[in-house]
Image (cartoon, rainbow, N blue to C red; front, top):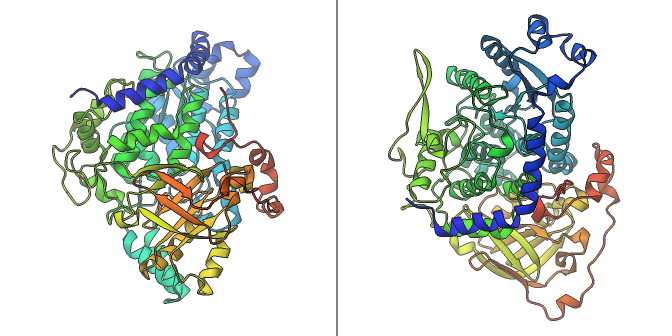
Length: 603
């Protein structure tokens, strides 16, 4: 089928907008690639330092034989999603050696968990960590001893930070090797019910702890469809994973086999491989458009609306919130994975997974097929799925129909006809709302606001039984410049309880919600943020605000609102403790959330 007309128009618009920045980027990476393998430019002394500890690989390295792969790893053994990476370097090195190549761990990058820091001050470093990861990767790769790079990362800010680094070193071929989700435990729906019961004071903490431990119970990514698993979807739809790699469980024969295959494929596309393919060529406007389509079709994390513009601009591609909205309007929501439904990612994978979803979207003209991928083929090859055979992994045709229509549907019979996110714009600024988990009757709300400056203050008001009527809760001074833009996911149980009591409630904030954003309407990433004097800083208790996710508007219904002066508050409490003092320059130089909320602005 021919490409959807709107999708083509959005792609052309992005390409036109990015013409000069993309040309400058490609010129830079073309120049870097033309200089040949980087090790050729190192002195003997430089190389001796790099190879001193390499044992049996030292001879090949010193003589410049074969490719040398750099490994950037987000391994740590505190976080379940990254613990499986402990054994990956040895698998990679053994596979490289068997193919006449070598591999070295170039460096490690931090991998923090939003699940650990939810509601804690450490969460104020979460978004900042994305740019730290990119910078740390840059330092690791600055040794210039590598012909290709393997990126090992899974979770929220880690994959976007690694993509920013990969684009920065876009002249080098690269591949992302995932670790996979943990097996299914306590259902996400049951876990959420228990959280709400605890928030309402109906159960004790020991019951809550038992439920949480039954949910997060083994190595691997959390099984709900939050930011971590949205990242994995994104890497596959953008062609940076091997087909079918995203949701294979850790510590299985298939997971190991896919890791081996990833190394072998990277060697084929690396310099001096047979099919040289720099990762900067893969990261083009079509790949990013495909990524946005995948986000909308699966009801993915709102955090990706921050990360995709940040990743794209590194490769000279400029995305806007309007691009997201236009793509959402034509993309059917084909998946129901918690928090959008009851299933987890293991159930989604079993129902046909990304291979089936990609095939449906291609057949509907809603994805670019003619893209470059790490497989060296177009996106149609990503409709296949890996199978173990006596001769290793082979790709076979994926299912022609969904194996569970409660989880995964066709593009022509979706759960809803439009994607899971909605762009909002009006007198209160611009932001986004995740609508895939919100019932249609809650897509429009008009109510008085209550102003808060911390999520704890909201919880305190809830415990004091102060919410007795329809209310839009405003939590401001939570943007990148205020305190690093933490997630406010800790408000989800509280607001859900109010909604279940029959109140019409919503949240408006210049902060973030989690990839697990649920059934309460939430206008997030409001820009300009309060610390920058945005309209959200002009609101007062009792102001009537209209939030309309059908028409994409967010407006203050108060005469003379524009003439008000924005309030200012003392933000000194956000400056120290839990390492926050080390990152003041990040807060001071953060770009607006609509541009990614980070510190990098290359064009």
